[in-house]
Length: 341
Image (cartoon, rainbow, N blue to C red; front, side, top):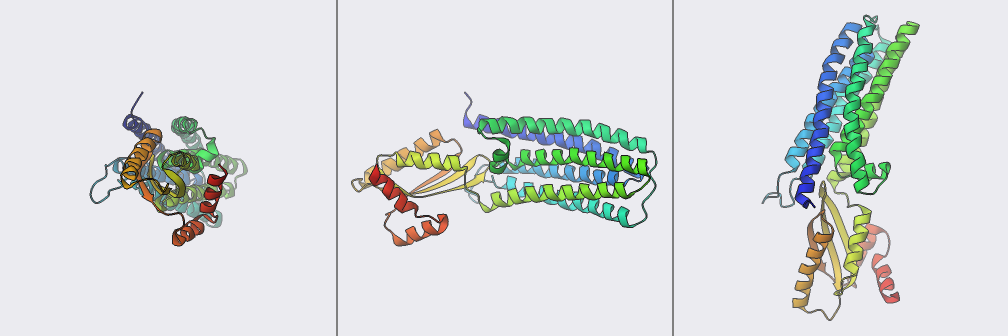
């Protein structure tokens, strides 16, 4: 059975493989789309070229995220560099928006309102779109394979996993490749309908829709990474399990407050404010804190830093902060549960 470090390295390596496959696919596809867009004069094809170029930038940001976030903690960053993964992933979302969506929307509006070029050598566009579909499909398959493995490990369905995942790299590649497939279908439809009807409106509309698709993807990724950068709490299931384990400790009377924050992918900071039983001596308290810390780390490998703070449950300022944060009288509920048991 592998250690936690081995599992982290394996997950890091798989995420890197997913990003590298996406980068290779997008680089080759981008060159082909640029050539096809210039030859055919299609706005949709040029928009897809901008899409692939933006995706290449995205993958470079994600590789930087994987490399820099793996650095160990030091004096200036005692909680490590895990959140760098969120920062670089946020920049990846910004690159999708600025380079891909902006150019695609401009191309669409220009084609719909200006003097579009006549399409030439349309067969080239169809060949490039078909090859791009194969390459993007291979990259998407790798992203889906990794997502499926991780969601099964976490025992979650797809949508809850995407909402709760603290690894933005594979999520970014999944969204990006899914948008790439949809963008290719839009480009194919726009070019085909323009060829059939002779109207450039379809080409411009396809380009505009590609741009709006990229806006949606960039917004979804940006929102996810903003929440992680601000400091999101851990998975509610992990939170409940930690609270249950703390309440089971013989020295603990009540868990007054339990704070968690993601400090990186699979890294969780925990601060537990505990009211210990009155009979616990200072020496007992010290030994109990060390034992509880060790037990929590052994049971929950994602816990990176653990802080246990003895507090009185009757402190009015603390009670007010807990009520303000959670919107419910958790201390009173805990007291009632303790008395009933």
